[in-house]
Length: 536
Ligand SMILES: *[C@@H]1O[C@H](CO)[C@@H](O)[C@H](O)[C@H]1NC(C)=O
Ligand SMILES: *[C@@H]1O[C@H](CO)[C@@H](O)[C@H](O)[C@H]1NC(C)=O
Ligand SMILES: *[C@@H]1O[C@H](CO)[C@@H](O)[C@H](O)[C@H]1NC(C)=O
Image (cartoon, rainbow, N blue to C red; front, side, top):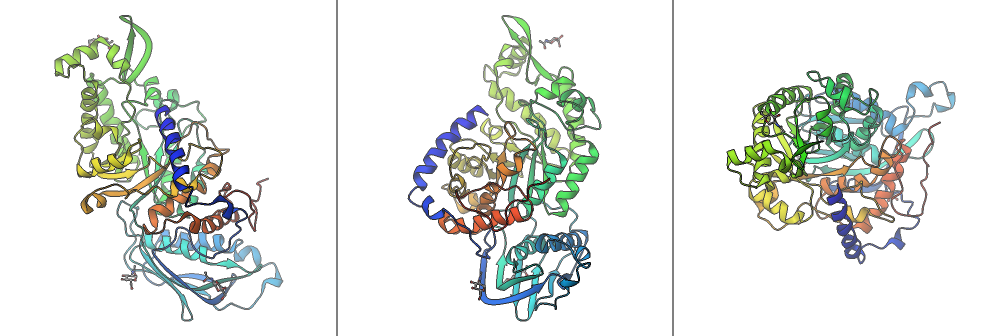
């Protein structure tokens, strides 16, 4: 992490300087905007001054094409999200028997049968029309319907207790990038299932579609394995800081209903100290002055037992997590311990690696990739894996996180691999002031490359590393700053003016507050029409 923080600080300063001309803070003081425009901005969007009233007691969603549990649950959820209390709770108040407004139904027409799980490259496009002839949402897949219903929910504004309204609107929308992810780290600090679910809900309201679950790391191992239960009982902080198989299934199901993929990351050979608490001989034993010093390093790549364990472990992970992809980490491997261990030295000699420990790392990673590839799963990896020259499967997704990301995106895509950008979106690095324009101004397509290379950039991820966040502040530190990146990854490339975005972002933040999320301030002094309801 030290490397990252150092780099981002530099990047950050540059960002501030270069965006000074474009972005004027003064203008944003006291933005308390009600634009009625959605976030992220749709690809094609137009509205009219015609206003249609909606009586919340009369309004319904109606499936006019395919339907399934995902759509039904969206109808139920958005009834509450848009209108607050549901009809059942209201019918005891006689004063609420107002006559129906002019819009009573949103017809949702899904063309194709629902998929069970969201996947890379799913069709999220939709068209939404609100006019005198009614309100209609068309999509090919249920995923497009989810995105469209979210947009609809943002267009509806409240007039008084029961009366809402929406302007005439025509939208044709689809995401610019297929992979729009958010990383949470549950190893440095444990996060409750409830917090993870709230975060998933917030994600769906900014049209994110991948939850990158950095579930374990050096510090703790909260994943309860079926085959290796000791990994959690010895590797977690304690018995309360774990995820059971039932809880993991619950999170995957919650995400599925929101159209969000869950990709777990089990990082090795580095970042795996917590694994060694239970798996004997997995980690390299470190030496100093010719003697064992009691410390452990990365996974021991010289022992066949390491690979036997990995085969069994990842076979389980492949079954527990339904997504096609598993993240295998591969970042920040420290060679010092490997260098100190005589057996490793002997192994290096035997393999003809000389003193090039990157070759040893490559040897390990190659074997791990072959194991996971054999499970018919794709994998995601941090950039070091290809930087060190490992041969990965053609469908591999390489996550670029270090400085010099423009060159790295060029390199990864020229090798023919899919690439994701996260270098400029480390939300965990914070500083005083307005930082979101720096996130907004960073674009995965900014590198120099051919059209073929650009196609291989499938999106990006915001990262909220867990050193300084837990249940108390992870949501407020993540939101609405993550939403800024959601717009970069969803909306057209031409949507890049931070000044124009500011009032909509302000409105999006206030909408999140209204919906119950503790979304922090983004634009300096101001207020929300409906302030955060402090839980009691
Ligand atoms: C909605 O209609 C009102 C009233 O005609 C108009 O003032 C407002 O600008 C419209 N909003 C949008 C987003 O078009
Ligand atoms: C949305 O409208 C566009 C333009 O009319 C059309 O090409 C496209 O197929 C429509 N998409 C869906 C999902 O209905
Ligand atoms: C080196 O390998 C030998 C033979 O497999 C084993 O007995 C010994 O424990 C190993 N030493 C270290 C430091 O791993």
